[in-house]
Length: 193
Image 1: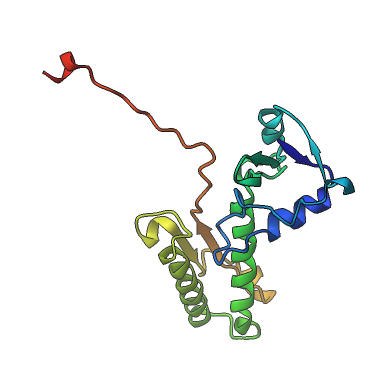
Image 2 (image 1 turned 180 degrees about the vertical axis):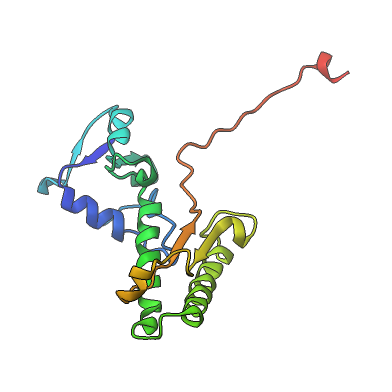
């Protein structure tokens, strides 16, 4: 197993390897040919049998697989908050925050009243609906996958007087299947009869 020695390289590699069209899918288990060709620059160090110790600490290891090459193996963060344990949900929330912020800039300086609130709810709900349809959000229907509230329940009179529009958004994000467990059983001839 290989472990990164320079944290800067880890950030660049974990974010940039194997660009994915969907932000919620991670660049893990990808061939890293070209990223770790020169091992004399101090980028990687070899550590045997330490992955079970390093993963809980948020260290994503480089592993070598014969015939498959070096692979980034893991998608954890160093956060102590269990909600931000994995890189995927954190990156996805950053994407959501930035996308919603950019796509609602039209609301600045509009009259802060029920019509604006309905328009903001519709705009954000449409965006999240598309995210749900594309498979980025967990839930059998949109109501299970997200909610958007922007009305008098989310803002006080003080908020309105200070020109603040407050929209409460909740999403149910997918988390990576870090450990896939298969249970295989076999019935004996006696149990079939």
